Amino acid sequence: MDTPASQPGGPSSAGGSSVPSGSSEGTDDDVRTASGPTLGEVLLAAEELWPESLAEDWDAVGLVVGRSEKTVAKILLAVDPTSAVLDEALEWGADLLITHHPLLLKPVNSVAGFTFKGDVVHRLIEQGCGLLTIHTNGDSAIGGVSDVLADALGLQDVQPLKQASAGLDEEGIGRCGDLAEVTSLGDFAAKVFSILPAVAGGVKVAGDPDGLVRRVAICGGAGDGLFDEVRASGADLYVTADLRHHPASEAREAAANGRPYLIDVSHFGSEWLWLTPAAEALDNVLQDLGYNVDIRVSSINTDPWDFILTPGTE
Ligand SMILES: [Zn+2]
Image (cartoon, rainbow, N blue to C red; front, side, top):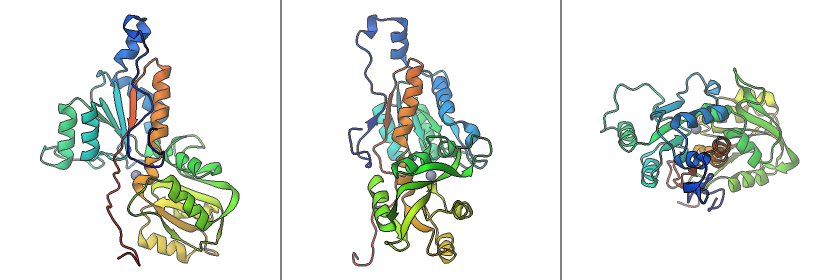
């Protein structure tokens, strides 16, 4: 990346845009590289990495906009399909925008251009840019959102919190693993803070800062529906996003010796970490097919919050 790994702030390129020198007079392979894969081939590459069969039943993953035969030279990855992200994709000339969150999770009866979502659909089609959603299949897959988070936090012997119903043992939602060394909750919270992009809401912690942590459960994105699995895992700490009052409060009341402690992080931030490894993985698959596609990670921070007041800062 050309910016610090923990901060949105500039596009990172996994594939690079360089065409091998002399490609204009080179072999058929070079010509093929220069023309890029079709969208259909990119979809097959994505399916290899993040099979749609791993998606949760309620989810809506896969291609939202695009034609299979269209050639793809530039791909942008982002967490959210917001207007600002779309501006970035179209200004750069992306042929495909891959987002983690679905634009159209719930069925719609209209994509009229005067609605936010309809406008996104229209602009994508008018400018020839596809949209692909890789959501809970990207969470569940090996090397997916929670695996990247677990790796960044130094967890070992990692297992899913909730195994995928149709997948390998290593696939599923959330992860649980052990730290190489026992760490205080305060120090581990500082580590969590350091690896995530800077967002207004910061990182919230429930528990004794001097309490000791070895076994850690994590779930990228909203994870407060997994407390039964967290307790069953024997975790000393649960790191996730969007912890609502009642599940968090009840988990604290039910805690044994204060555990599991809780760390509540930015939903966007917890998933943003995955984008660069995802771009690299997709680039590797496409390179194996003989294609050199320019793949970048969005520079837009799509965390919805702008500032926060806390005691002493008001
Ligand atoms: Zn999410």
